[in-house]
Length: 232
Ligand SMILES: [Zn+2]
Image 1 (tube, helix red, strand yellow):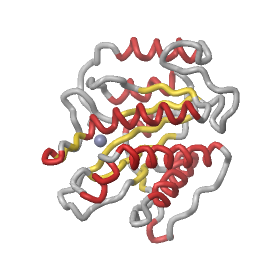
Image 2: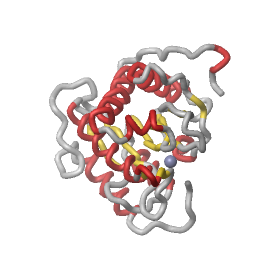
Image 3: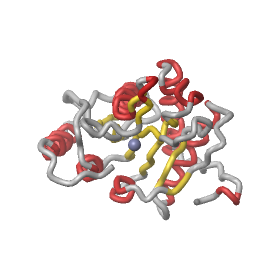
């Protein structure tokens, strides 16, 4: 959710990110890339949604808090992406408030190759479940990225019938690179909480997203959804 007002510290982040990118991965915050790896030479900005007083979607009986899950998941993605050779910047690394524009500006200023925003969904019906990937309408590379990520998420959870969907989210609109927003699951769904709360399954989800991104990097075409479910 966008919030009004300046956010102290974001400019520092932006400058720090630019400097780190300029140092070709030699400084703290951007680990040195392995010489090889399918994502070598790729800079990926991972954006953990929400933070601070904005906790996002919550299911309090199970202590499922979106802003906590997204931050932990972002660190997990960072570690696994680095193992594939990528350099990674997180838009936030603590439980802090951060407006939407600085998040995407970190990606634009550093000329990142990808922008991945991570969220958790909610719906007041516990039978509503399934991870889902969003992209900004009309952005073909972002659409292909979303298709490939969603394909991998569906492989991991064959019960997940959700297809990619357009979303006019500000961070997706402002990103100047292929960008996707992944809703990892619904906090109200026991089915999805089984994924969100289990460290092993979380890692499988992170690996699924990375496989989708790697397939995009290789130039694969995304598997098209049935026509009636396309580009809603
Ligand atoms: Zn969210």
